[in-house]
Length: 234
Length: 291
Image (tube, rainbow over all chains, first blue to last red; front, side, top):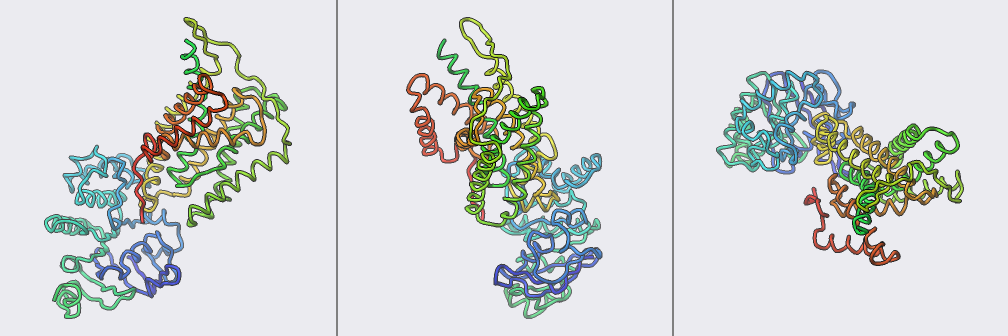
Protein backbone atom coordinates (compact mmCIF):
# COMPACT_ATOMS: atom_id res chain seq x y z
CA UNK A 1 0.00 0.00 0.00
CA UNK A 2 2.56 2.60 1.17
CA UNK A 3 6.12 2.04 0.04
CA UNK A 4 9.04 4.28 0.97
CA UNK A 5 12.32 3.67 -0.84
CA UNK A 6 15.73 5.19 -0.18
CA UNK A 7 14.14 8.35 1.26
CA UNK A 8 16.51 11.20 2.06
CA UNK A 9 15.56 14.54 3.61
CA UNK A 10 17.91 17.44 4.18
CA UNK A 11 17.58 20.55 6.31
CA UNK A 12 20.16 22.82 4.69
CA UNK A 13 23.43 20.93 4.97
CA UNK A 14 22.20 18.46 7.52
CA UNK A 15 20.86 15.16 6.31
CA UNK A 16 18.02 14.30 8.69
CA UNK A 17 16.90 11.15 6.89
CA UNK A 18 19.74 9.22 5.34
CA UNK A 19 18.09 6.88 2.90
CA UNK A 20 15.40 4.78 4.59
CA UNK A 21 13.13 2.16 3.06
CA UNK A 22 10.05 0.62 4.60
CA UNK A 23 6.59 -0.42 3.63
CA UNK A 24 3.11 -0.66 5.08
CA UNK A 25 0.88 -3.37 3.65
CA UNK A 26 -2.87 -3.29 3.35
CA UNK A 27 -4.63 -3.72 6.74
CA UNK A 28 -1.48 -3.66 8.84
CA UNK A 29 -0.48 -1.64 11.88
CA UNK A 30 3.14 -0.71 11.32
CA UNK A 31 5.08 1.33 13.83
CA UNK A 32 8.20 3.41 13.53
CA UNK A 33 9.89 3.71 16.90
CA UNK A 34 12.93 5.69 17.88
CA UNK A 35 14.31 8.29 20.23
CA UNK A 36 13.72 12.02 20.07
CA UNK A 37 15.45 13.44 17.00
CA UNK A 38 15.72 10.12 15.18
CA UNK A 39 13.73 11.55 12.26
CA UNK A 40 10.29 10.08 12.91
CA UNK A 41 8.30 13.28 12.43
CA UNK A 42 10.47 14.29 9.47
CA UNK A 43 9.57 10.97 7.82
CA UNK A 44 5.87 11.60 8.46
CA UNK A 45 6.07 15.12 7.06
CA UNK A 46 7.89 13.84 3.98
CA UNK A 47 5.12 11.32 3.33
CA UNK A 48 2.32 13.88 3.57
CA UNK A 49 4.30 16.43 1.58
CA UNK A 50 4.78 19.05 4.30
CA UNK A 51 8.52 18.99 3.64
CA UNK A 52 10.40 18.40 0.43
CA UNK A 53 12.34 15.19 0.00
CA UNK A 54 15.90 15.27 -1.32
CA UNK A 55 15.95 11.79 -2.84
CA UNK A 56 13.98 8.60 -2.96
CA UNK A 57 10.42 7.64 -3.67
CA UNK A 58 7.22 7.40 -1.64
CA UNK A 59 4.42 5.58 -3.37
CA UNK A 60 0.84 5.05 -2.28
CA UNK A 61 -0.90 2.28 -4.23
CA UNK A 62 1.48 2.98 -7.08
CA UNK A 63 1.06 6.81 -7.09
CA UNK A 64 4.29 8.71 -6.53
CA UNK A 65 3.59 11.16 -3.67
CA UNK A 66 6.76 13.26 -3.98
CA UNK A 67 5.59 14.52 -7.36
CA UNK A 68 2.13 15.82 -6.43
CA UNK A 69 1.20 18.99 -4.51
CA UNK A 70 0.85 18.32 -0.76
CA UNK A 71 -2.82 19.37 -0.50
CA UNK A 72 -3.77 16.65 -2.99
CA UNK A 73 -2.29 13.78 -0.96
CA UNK A 74 -5.21 13.48 1.48
CA UNK A 75 -7.50 13.05 -1.53
CA UNK A 76 -5.60 9.87 -2.41
CA UNK A 77 -6.63 8.30 0.89
CA UNK A 78 -3.73 9.18 3.17
CA UNK A 79 -4.57 11.24 6.26
CA UNK A 80 -2.22 12.32 9.00
CA UNK A 81 -2.73 13.09 12.68
CA UNK A 82 0.18 15.45 13.19
CA UNK A 83 2.50 15.61 16.17
CA UNK A 84 1.16 18.04 18.77
CA UNK A 85 -2.41 17.47 17.45
CA UNK A 86 -2.54 20.86 15.65
CA UNK A 87 -6.31 21.23 15.87
CA UNK A 88 -7.73 24.57 14.72
CA UNK A 89 -7.96 26.08 18.20
CA UNK A 90 -10.31 28.94 17.35
CA UNK A 91 -12.82 26.80 15.49
CA UNK A 92 -15.36 24.57 17.18
CA UNK A 93 -15.02 20.81 17.49
CA UNK A 94 -17.60 20.31 14.76
CA UNK A 95 -15.97 22.86 12.44
CA UNK A 96 -12.69 20.99 12.86
CA UNK A 97 -14.39 17.75 11.85
CA UNK A 98 -16.00 19.41 8.83
CA UNK A 99 -12.58 20.71 7.76
CA UNK A 100 -11.35 17.12 7.95
CA UNK A 101 -13.83 16.34 5.17
CA UNK A 102 -12.72 19.37 3.13
CA UNK A 103 -12.26 17.52 -0.16
CA UNK A 104 -15.40 15.40 0.12
CA UNK A 105 -18.55 16.39 -1.75
CA UNK A 106 -21.05 13.93 -0.21
CA UNK A 107 -22.79 16.23 2.29
CA UNK A 108 -25.18 13.60 3.62
CA UNK A 109 -22.41 11.07 4.25
CA UNK A 110 -20.32 13.75 6.00
CA UNK A 111 -23.11 14.40 8.52
CA UNK A 112 -23.33 10.67 9.18
CA UNK A 113 -19.56 10.33 9.61
CA UNK A 114 -19.55 13.18 12.13
CA UNK A 115 -22.04 11.16 14.19
CA UNK A 116 -19.74 8.12 13.85
CA UNK A 117 -16.85 10.16 15.22
CA UNK A 118 -19.02 11.22 18.17
CA UNK A 119 -19.83 7.56 18.73
CA UNK A 120 -16.15 6.64 18.79
CA UNK A 121 -15.26 9.66 20.93
CA UNK A 122 -18.35 10.53 23.03
CA UNK A 123 -16.53 13.40 24.72
CA UNK A 124 -16.20 15.20 21.38
CA UNK A 125 -19.97 15.00 20.96
CA UNK A 126 -20.48 16.64 24.33
CA UNK A 127 -18.14 19.46 23.32
CA UNK A 128 -19.19 19.85 19.70
CA UNK A 129 -19.88 23.60 19.89
CA UNK A 130 -16.83 24.37 22.02
CA UNK A 131 -13.70 25.98 20.54
CA UNK A 132 -11.08 23.26 20.04
CA UNK A 133 -8.52 25.32 21.95
CA UNK A 134 -10.52 24.90 25.15
CA UNK A 135 -10.28 21.08 25.06
CA UNK A 136 -7.88 19.08 27.22
CA UNK A 137 -4.83 17.47 25.65
CA UNK A 138 -6.51 14.07 25.44
CA UNK A 139 -9.65 15.54 23.89
CA UNK A 140 -7.56 17.45 21.36
CA UNK A 141 -5.82 14.19 20.44
CA UNK A 142 -9.21 12.57 19.91
CA UNK A 143 -10.33 15.54 17.82
CA UNK A 144 -7.19 15.36 15.68
CA UNK A 145 -7.88 11.65 15.12
CA UNK A 146 -11.56 12.23 14.39
CA UNK A 147 -10.67 15.04 12.00
CA UNK A 148 -8.28 12.77 10.09
CA UNK A 149 -10.90 10.00 9.95
CA UNK A 150 -13.36 12.45 8.37
CA UNK A 151 -11.26 12.26 5.19
CA UNK A 152 -12.16 8.54 5.02
CA UNK A 153 -8.53 7.54 4.61
CA UNK A 154 -7.43 4.08 3.56
CA UNK A 155 -4.21 4.67 5.51
CA UNK A 156 -3.92 6.76 8.67
CA UNK A 157 -0.61 8.18 9.85
CA UNK A 158 -0.39 8.91 13.57
CA UNK A 159 2.50 10.95 14.90
CA UNK A 160 3.11 10.56 18.65
CA UNK A 161 -0.55 10.19 19.66
CA UNK A 162 0.39 9.41 23.27
CA UNK A 163 2.54 12.47 23.80
CA UNK A 164 1.74 14.31 27.02
CA UNK A 165 -1.21 12.11 27.96
CA UNK A 166 -1.89 10.26 31.22
CA UNK A 167 -1.34 6.47 31.16
CA UNK A 168 -5.10 5.92 31.35
CA UNK A 169 -5.74 8.10 28.31
CA UNK A 170 -2.85 6.47 26.46
CA UNK A 171 -4.55 3.09 26.91
CA UNK A 172 -7.80 4.52 25.61
CA UNK A 173 -6.12 6.07 22.56
CA UNK A 174 -4.29 2.84 21.71
CA UNK A 175 -7.48 0.84 22.06
CA UNK A 176 -9.18 3.20 19.61
CA UNK A 177 -6.26 2.89 17.17
CA UNK A 178 -6.75 -0.88 17.19
CA UNK A 179 -10.50 -0.44 16.64
CA UNK A 180 -9.92 1.91 13.69
CA UNK A 181 -7.58 -0.71 12.23
CA UNK A 182 -10.13 -3.49 12.71
CA UNK A 183 -12.67 -1.45 10.77
CA UNK A 184 -10.32 -1.63 7.78
CA UNK A 185 -7.96 1.36 7.97
CA UNK A 186 -4.25 0.66 7.59
CA UNK A 187 -2.15 2.39 10.27
CA UNK A 188 1.36 3.83 10.31
CA UNK A 189 2.18 4.80 13.87
CA UNK A 190 5.16 6.81 15.04
CA UNK A 191 5.83 6.57 18.76
CA UNK A 192 8.34 7.24 21.48
CA UNK A 193 6.27 4.99 23.71
CA UNK A 194 7.84 1.92 22.14
CA UNK A 195 6.31 -0.60 24.52
CA UNK A 196 2.73 0.37 23.72
CA UNK A 197 3.42 0.79 20.02
CA UNK A 198 5.05 -2.64 19.68
CA UNK A 199 2.20 -4.27 21.60
CA UNK A 200 -0.35 -3.36 18.90
CA UNK A 201 1.89 -3.43 15.80
CA UNK A 202 2.03 -6.22 13.24
CA UNK A 203 5.44 -5.04 12.14
CA UNK A 204 7.88 -2.42 13.34
CA UNK A 205 10.97 -0.49 12.30
CA UNK A 206 13.55 1.12 14.57
CA UNK A 207 14.77 4.52 13.40
CA UNK A 208 18.10 5.82 14.72
CA UNK A 209 19.51 9.21 13.63
CA UNK A 210 18.01 9.03 10.18
CA UNK A 211 18.58 5.32 9.48
CA UNK A 212 16.51 2.19 9.96
CA UNK A 213 18.60 -0.09 12.12
CA UNK A 214 16.17 -2.90 12.92
CA UNK A 215 12.95 -4.32 11.61
CA UNK A 216 10.69 -7.17 12.49
CA UNK A 217 7.31 -8.13 13.87
CA UNK A 218 5.97 -6.12 16.79
CA UNK A 219 6.31 -9.12 19.08
CA UNK A 220 9.77 -10.00 17.77
CA UNK A 221 11.17 -6.54 18.32
CA UNK A 222 9.59 -6.32 21.77
CA UNK A 223 11.68 -9.39 22.70
CA UNK A 224 14.83 -8.20 20.92
CA UNK A 225 17.66 -7.55 23.36
CA UNK A 226 18.83 -4.34 21.65
CA UNK A 227 15.33 -2.88 21.53
CA UNK A 228 14.71 -3.82 25.16
CA UNK A 229 17.92 -2.09 26.23
CA UNK A 230 17.46 1.06 24.20
CA UNK A 231 13.71 1.65 24.23
CA UNK A 232 11.96 -0.55 26.74
CA UNK A 233 14.06 0.23 29.81
CA UNK A 234 16.00 -3.06 30.02
CA UNK B 1 -25.50 69.62 17.31
CA UNK B 2 -22.22 70.59 15.70
CA UNK B 3 -20.55 67.86 17.68
CA UNK B 4 -23.01 65.30 16.37
CA UNK B 5 -22.47 66.36 12.79
CA UNK B 6 -18.69 66.19 13.26
CA UNK B 7 -19.11 62.77 14.80
CA UNK B 8 -21.08 61.51 11.81
CA UNK B 9 -18.47 62.93 9.43
CA UNK B 10 -15.87 61.08 11.47
CA UNK B 11 -17.86 57.89 11.01
CA UNK B 12 -17.88 58.57 7.27
CA UNK B 13 -14.11 58.99 7.04
CA UNK B 14 -13.64 56.08 9.44
CA UNK B 15 -15.75 53.88 7.18
CA UNK B 16 -13.29 54.44 4.32
CA UNK B 17 -10.37 53.66 6.61
CA UNK B 18 -12.18 50.53 7.82
CA UNK B 19 -12.69 49.20 4.28
CA UNK B 20 -9.00 49.75 3.49
CA UNK B 21 -7.96 48.31 6.86
CA UNK B 22 -9.80 45.08 6.00
CA UNK B 23 -7.32 44.52 3.17
CA UNK B 24 -4.36 44.90 5.51
CA UNK B 25 -5.83 42.81 8.26
CA UNK B 26 -7.02 39.91 6.07
CA UNK B 27 -3.72 39.62 4.25
CA UNK B 28 -1.87 39.79 7.55
CA UNK B 29 -4.17 37.23 9.13
CA UNK B 30 -3.63 34.70 6.37
CA UNK B 31 -0.32 35.41 4.63
CA UNK B 32 1.27 36.82 7.84
CA UNK B 33 2.71 39.75 5.91
CA UNK B 34 2.21 43.50 5.80
CA UNK B 35 1.27 44.45 2.26
CA UNK B 36 2.50 48.02 2.12
CA UNK B 37 1.52 48.21 -1.54
CA UNK B 38 -2.13 48.05 -0.49
CA UNK B 39 -2.47 51.86 -0.45
CA UNK B 40 -1.18 52.03 -4.01
CA UNK B 41 -3.76 49.52 -5.18
CA UNK B 42 -6.28 52.13 -4.02
CA UNK B 43 -4.51 54.70 -6.19
CA UNK B 44 -4.75 52.40 -9.24
CA UNK B 45 -8.45 51.88 -8.49
CA UNK B 46 -8.94 55.64 -8.37
CA UNK B 47 -7.31 56.11 -11.79
CA UNK B 48 -9.30 53.27 -13.34
CA UNK B 49 -12.56 54.73 -12.01
CA UNK B 50 -11.49 58.22 -13.09
CA UNK B 51 -10.75 57.17 -16.68
CA UNK B 52 -13.83 54.97 -16.89
CA UNK B 53 -16.11 57.79 -15.76
CA UNK B 54 -14.52 60.74 -17.59
CA UNK B 55 -12.83 59.36 -20.73
CA UNK B 56 -15.10 56.45 -21.53
CA UNK B 57 -18.26 57.94 -20.02
CA UNK B 58 -19.21 54.69 -18.37
CA UNK B 59 -22.12 54.93 -15.89
CA UNK B 60 -21.25 54.98 -12.19
CA UNK B 61 -21.90 51.35 -11.23
CA UNK B 62 -20.06 49.75 -14.20
CA UNK B 63 -17.27 52.28 -13.59
CA UNK B 64 -16.90 51.10 -9.99
CA UNK B 65 -17.09 47.52 -11.21
CA UNK B 66 -14.24 48.16 -13.66
CA UNK B 67 -12.11 49.51 -10.80
CA UNK B 68 -12.97 46.49 -8.64
CA UNK B 69 -12.04 44.03 -11.40
CA UNK B 70 -8.76 45.80 -12.24
CA UNK B 71 -7.72 46.02 -8.59
CA UNK B 72 -8.65 42.39 -7.90
CA UNK B 73 -6.53 41.22 -10.83
CA UNK B 74 -3.72 43.58 -9.82
CA UNK B 75 -3.75 42.29 -6.24
CA UNK B 76 -3.57 38.65 -7.35
CA UNK B 77 -0.80 39.41 -9.88
CA UNK B 78 1.25 41.30 -7.28
CA UNK B 79 0.96 38.35 -4.91
CA UNK B 80 1.96 35.82 -7.58
CA UNK B 81 4.91 37.75 -8.94
CA UNK B 82 6.30 39.55 -5.91
CA UNK B 83 5.28 37.71 -2.74
CA UNK B 84 4.74 34.06 -3.65
CA UNK B 85 8.41 33.42 -4.52
CA UNK B 86 9.23 34.66 -1.01
CA UNK B 87 6.93 32.25 0.85
CA UNK B 88 9.89 30.66 2.66
CA UNK B 89 11.90 33.89 3.00
CA UNK B 90 12.24 35.98 6.17
CA UNK B 91 9.43 38.41 6.91
CA UNK B 92 11.89 41.29 6.52
CA UNK B 93 12.52 40.38 2.86
CA UNK B 94 8.78 40.28 2.23
CA UNK B 95 8.32 43.66 3.92
CA UNK B 96 11.05 45.28 1.81
CA UNK B 97 9.54 43.73 -1.33
CA UNK B 98 6.16 45.20 -0.41
CA UNK B 99 7.70 48.66 -0.06
CA UNK B 100 9.36 48.10 -3.45
CA UNK B 101 6.04 47.16 -5.05
CA UNK B 102 4.54 50.31 -3.55
CA UNK B 103 7.20 52.54 -5.17
CA UNK B 104 6.90 50.59 -8.41
CA UNK B 105 3.16 51.28 -8.60
CA UNK B 106 3.52 54.96 -7.69
CA UNK B 107 6.22 55.59 -10.26
CA UNK B 108 4.47 53.58 -12.95
CA UNK B 109 1.37 55.70 -12.37
CA UNK B 110 3.44 58.86 -12.65
CA UNK B 111 4.99 57.61 -15.90
CA UNK B 112 1.65 56.58 -17.37
CA UNK B 113 -0.62 59.34 -16.17
CA UNK B 114 1.81 62.14 -15.13
CA UNK B 115 2.10 63.67 -11.67
CA UNK B 116 -0.40 66.44 -12.32
CA UNK B 117 -3.56 65.98 -10.27
CA UNK B 118 -6.80 65.01 -11.99
CA UNK B 119 -10.19 66.10 -10.74
CA UNK B 120 -12.47 63.20 -9.90
CA UNK B 121 -16.01 63.89 -11.13
CA UNK B 122 -18.69 64.43 -8.52
CA UNK B 123 -20.57 61.16 -8.56
CA UNK B 124 -22.96 61.29 -5.67
CA UNK B 125 -25.55 64.06 -5.34
CA UNK B 126 -24.29 66.82 -3.10
CA UNK B 127 -27.53 67.06 -1.14
CA UNK B 128 -27.89 66.44 2.54
CA UNK B 129 -30.32 64.81 4.85
CA UNK B 130 -31.71 67.33 7.34
CA UNK B 131 -33.47 66.58 10.56
CA UNK B 132 -33.70 68.61 13.74
CA UNK B 133 -30.95 71.00 12.68
CA UNK B 134 -28.56 68.13 11.97
CA UNK B 135 -27.38 67.91 8.38
CA UNK B 136 -25.64 64.83 7.01
CA UNK B 137 -24.55 64.72 3.39
CA UNK B 138 -25.81 61.82 1.28
CA UNK B 139 -22.21 61.05 0.46
CA UNK B 140 -21.41 60.42 4.12
CA UNK B 141 -24.52 58.28 4.51
CA UNK B 142 -23.64 56.21 1.43
CA UNK B 143 -20.07 55.81 2.65
CA UNK B 144 -21.20 54.54 6.06
CA UNK B 145 -23.82 52.28 4.49
CA UNK B 146 -21.26 50.80 2.07
CA UNK B 147 -18.93 50.05 4.95
CA UNK B 148 -21.70 48.28 6.86
CA UNK B 149 -22.74 46.20 3.84
CA UNK B 150 -19.11 45.22 3.17
CA UNK B 151 -18.65 44.24 6.82
CA UNK B 152 -21.79 42.11 6.95
CA UNK B 153 -21.03 40.35 3.66
CA UNK B 154 -17.43 39.66 4.63
CA UNK B 155 -18.36 38.36 8.08
CA UNK B 156 -20.94 36.02 6.55
CA UNK B 157 -18.44 34.87 3.94
CA UNK B 158 -15.72 34.14 6.51
CA UNK B 159 -18.02 32.38 8.97
CA UNK B 160 -20.58 30.63 6.80
CA UNK B 161 -18.84 29.45 3.64
CA UNK B 162 -16.44 26.59 3.05
CA UNK B 163 -13.82 28.93 1.59
CA UNK B 164 -14.22 31.19 4.64
CA UNK B 165 -13.64 28.30 6.98
CA UNK B 166 -10.58 27.26 4.95
CA UNK B 167 -9.33 30.85 5.29
CA UNK B 168 -9.71 30.69 9.07
CA UNK B 169 -7.90 27.35 9.10
CA UNK B 170 -5.02 28.79 7.04
CA UNK B 171 -4.72 31.76 9.37
CA UNK B 172 -4.25 29.38 12.31
CA UNK B 173 -2.00 26.66 10.89
CA UNK B 174 -1.04 26.36 7.22
CA UNK B 175 0.56 22.94 7.66
CA UNK B 176 -2.51 21.44 9.29
CA UNK B 177 -4.70 23.14 6.67
CA UNK B 178 -2.65 21.45 3.93
CA UNK B 179 -3.20 18.09 5.63
CA UNK B 180 -6.97 18.71 5.32
CA UNK B 181 -6.52 19.11 1.56
CA UNK B 182 -6.74 22.92 1.55
CA UNK B 183 -4.70 24.55 -1.22
CA UNK B 184 -3.00 27.26 0.84
CA UNK B 185 -1.69 29.14 -2.20
CA UNK B 186 -5.20 29.39 -3.62
CA UNK B 187 -6.54 30.70 -0.30
CA UNK B 188 -3.81 33.35 -0.18
CA UNK B 189 -4.72 34.40 -3.75
CA UNK B 190 -8.39 34.67 -2.78
CA UNK B 191 -7.44 36.81 0.22
CA UNK B 192 -5.45 39.21 -1.95
CA UNK B 193 -8.32 39.30 -4.45
CA UNK B 194 -10.87 40.25 -1.77
CA UNK B 195 -8.58 42.81 -0.11
CA UNK B 196 -7.77 44.47 -3.43
CA UNK B 197 -11.39 44.47 -4.60
CA UNK B 198 -12.30 46.25 -1.35
CA UNK B 199 -9.48 48.70 -2.00
CA UNK B 200 -11.19 49.63 -5.28
CA UNK B 201 -14.46 50.33 -3.48
CA UNK B 202 -12.55 52.42 -0.94
CA UNK B 203 -10.85 54.34 -3.74
CA UNK B 204 -14.17 55.46 -5.21
CA UNK B 205 -15.48 56.52 -1.77
CA UNK B 206 -12.22 58.30 -1.04
CA UNK B 207 -12.26 60.20 -4.34
CA UNK B 208 -15.90 61.10 -3.91
CA UNK B 209 -14.92 62.78 -0.63
CA UNK B 210 -11.52 64.17 -1.70
CA UNK B 211 -11.66 64.49 -5.48
CA UNK B 212 -7.98 64.89 -6.38
CA UNK B 213 -6.38 61.91 -8.11
CA UNK B 214 -2.57 61.76 -7.96
CA UNK B 215 -0.01 58.91 -8.08
CA UNK B 216 0.59 59.21 -4.34
CA UNK B 217 -3.07 59.40 -3.42
CA UNK B 218 -3.00 56.01 -1.70
CA UNK B 219 -0.05 56.59 0.64
CA UNK B 220 -1.65 58.57 3.44
CA UNK B 221 -5.01 56.71 3.56
CA UNK B 222 -2.96 53.50 3.30
CA UNK B 223 -0.85 54.36 6.33
CA UNK B 224 -3.90 55.59 8.25
CA UNK B 225 -5.80 52.39 7.47
CA UNK B 226 -2.79 50.30 8.43
CA UNK B 227 -2.77 52.22 11.70
CA UNK B 228 -6.48 51.49 12.07
CA UNK B 229 -5.83 47.79 11.52
CA UNK B 230 -3.11 47.74 14.19
CA UNK B 231 -5.27 49.90 16.45
CA UNK B 232 -8.12 47.38 16.33
CA UNK B 233 -5.83 44.35 16.47
CA UNK B 234 -4.23 43.24 13.23
CA UNK B 235 -5.68 40.01 11.88
CA UNK B 236 -9.11 40.74 13.36
CA UNK B 237 -11.96 41.76 11.04
CA UNK B 238 -14.16 43.42 13.70
CA UNK B 239 -10.92 45.06 14.88
CA UNK B 240 -10.44 46.66 11.46
CA UNK B 241 -13.96 48.10 11.62
CA UNK B 242 -13.55 49.40 15.16
CA UNK B 243 -10.05 50.74 14.49
CA UNK B 244 -11.10 52.43 11.25
CA UNK B 245 -14.17 54.11 12.76
CA UNK B 246 -12.29 55.29 15.86
CA UNK B 247 -9.47 56.65 13.76
CA UNK B 248 -11.87 58.60 11.55
CA UNK B 249 -13.74 60.02 14.53
CA UNK B 250 -10.57 61.01 16.36
CA UNK B 251 -9.19 62.64 13.22
CA UNK B 252 -12.31 64.70 12.46
CA UNK B 253 -12.89 65.70 16.09
CA UNK B 254 -9.30 66.82 16.55
CA UNK B 255 -9.54 68.80 13.32
CA UNK B 256 -12.74 70.45 14.52
CA UNK B 257 -11.85 71.17 18.11
CA UNK B 258 -8.09 71.15 18.51
CA UNK B 259 -6.10 71.89 15.39
CA UNK B 260 -6.16 70.94 11.73
CA UNK B 261 -2.38 70.72 11.68
CA UNK B 262 -2.14 68.58 14.78
CA UNK B 263 -4.85 66.05 13.85
CA UNK B 264 -2.38 63.45 12.53
CA UNK B 265 -0.16 63.93 15.56
CA UNK B 266 -3.14 63.21 17.78
CA UNK B 267 -4.22 60.19 15.72
CA UNK B 268 -0.80 58.56 15.89
CA UNK B 269 -0.36 59.67 19.52
CA UNK B 270 -3.52 57.78 20.46
CA UNK B 271 -2.20 54.74 18.55
CA UNK B 272 1.03 54.78 20.55
CA UNK B 273 -0.85 55.03 23.83
CA UNK B 274 -3.19 52.16 22.90
CA UNK B 275 -0.29 49.94 21.86
CA UNK B 276 1.55 50.71 25.10
CA UNK B 277 -1.47 49.64 27.12
CA UNK B 278 -2.58 46.78 24.89
CA UNK B 279 0.16 45.70 22.47
CA UNK B 280 -2.14 43.40 20.48
CA UNK B 281 -4.59 46.22 19.68
CA UNK B 282 -8.14 46.67 20.91
CA UNK B 283 -9.58 43.35 19.71
CA UNK B 284 -6.32 41.56 18.97
CA UNK B 285 -5.72 38.03 20.09
CA UNK B 286 -2.59 37.05 21.91
CA UNK B 287 0.03 36.27 19.34
CA UNK B 288 2.03 33.20 20.15
CA UNK B 289 5.29 32.82 18.33
CA UNK B 290 5.50 29.36 16.86
CA UNK B 291 8.78 27.57 16.43
